[in-house]
Length: 443
Image (cartoon, rainbow, N blue to C red; front, top):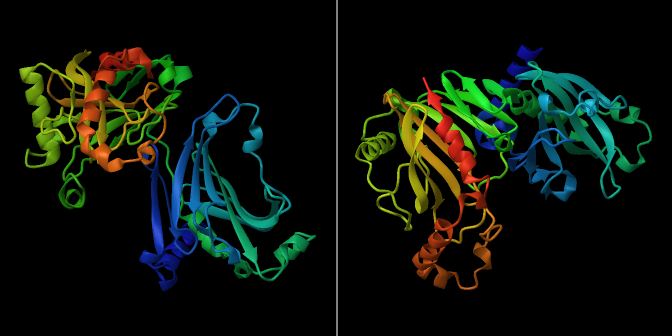
């Protein structure tokens, strides 16, 4: 059945109805670059945005993908109402077994449906909105073949063949053709059928690791407050024709350790460690090659490190992976040894424009090289600085032109404030992150 459905998918999306410019790919969420992928027609939604909710004592972890500007009935485009939910089974509390077996029996148009990495059932149900309005919904419930994830989907639909609020028997819906609904059931089936949900190469639950990771020659320790799970993935080198289509050209492959359940979120960074083979870095005519040379030179010469605040600094401290923004703040930089290597860490802020720095804009970064010169080790961890304004403050500035003209003065004052702040004033505390870095060993 799956093979037939894939063929149907390819055919329908190759027709003029679903031409390439009338559909969009959804790739990735949060830590996984390609963990979730699917195709959705722009006739259904204008955009799809993922939102991550960490696990709690009474609720599982959830990746919620909201379809924005979902087209529904004669009300036109509405902001929400359609969503796809992906739940790791390992995070479901013991008393929430209902999440594993919640198929609705009183449903119309039930159909067994495969997606790229699993299978489930789709059906049509009558539901009641928060406002008490009766509405029709297309729903899908399934799980991946590896039993890692539950997949649920809800899409409001309508029909002009029946008055929904007067439907007394679900059989009346079953008597309608699939094409009597809008969006058509087949269109939504195709969306679900294109879904792929892939787990990381390895997952380590904090409760089982005792704060220690040993995977593929990389070991490190971490405090349980930094994650309830560590996930490991490997990514291939970028070179040749693929490199020509990227912002930074050729780039090395890497192993990534993601900290799931990290206590705060940043505006541009996710919490992770990376290990990159030096042999895979390009020559110095490429940005990644240039940055490697800068790092090697800095660690060989060991110049004195100092804090700085300069929008668009001409001599930024090395950072990997590369960021499409300017290094604006460097605070408390210092060299730091790990088990078999050395690097530098600092608190930093990157920006593409002159704007105020909010509490979740700063991040901790580390970049170093193993003693044998074979591996680059990097770390990026968002910080919450409670002593800075919370939320985005750009639009609260009455005279932005005046602020922009005095931006350097603002940065100088901000740097003084950050520089004198004790590392324990951040969430998470800087000593916890230094301890992670110091414990790293790369074989």
